[in-house]
Image 1 (spheres, rainbow, N blue to C red):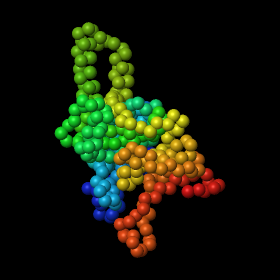
Image 2: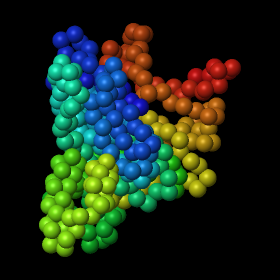
Image 3: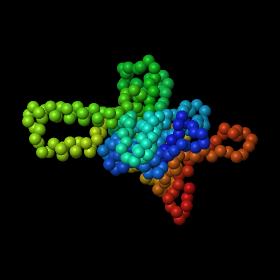
Length: 335
């Protein structure tokens, strides 16, 4: 479950979110969106496996030099797939559903027609198990990095495009390897409109089935109403676009448990079953440092900025990046 603040045009008159949406993932694969009062706005079956993690990246004023503004996004992790929903399109859909619910309540009925939800679905490959993830955002590589990646993946005779492509980076933790780095090139996967595709497919299928039934004399079949009811109850699940792993940090005995992205989108902290905290450099894909802490460890919602109160050589823009893993041991109360 994740709580998502909603505001129009990234601002509101009161300086606070206009309203709050609660996103809940279920073991059936459904993702449901509720208002702060528990009213269901939208329900979508994105995958037939249990939803493991939901993470939301909302708009935040850039606090670090050189960090570009990242798109708002909701990401849902499944055992073998990752679904990403663009924040702007999601906000438009939720706002339309919220308005429909308000009109239906005023009219005394509960019938609403949710708009189609656009999303991207990636099938994460070549990793044994995945338990957590983080969406770093869109990266713009240099020409040198483009040539290096092309030669590494395609060999000496690899073809190189004229301009470096924009890629979305996803980092996962689990086992085999312990940490995996995935890169999705922008434009390789078109957003899926499951509701529209399901409606068109159902109409086409029913038309063909009715025509074939008339030709072959199947109109008197007793099982036809039951089959149609079963088809209507189970929505169509769109297939995932294959996304192979680019590289990883192999460790056969270590199993990652959680990953937390820094606000500057360049570092990430990973906890494992050995009670270690690993600091990753996401741009270079290497381990910077590893700490041994109390086991087990749980990270907070995100690493915090602690502004400096001392004066002198530190300016108002100087804010150290601090991360605080907390132990659930209430007797010791360690932080």
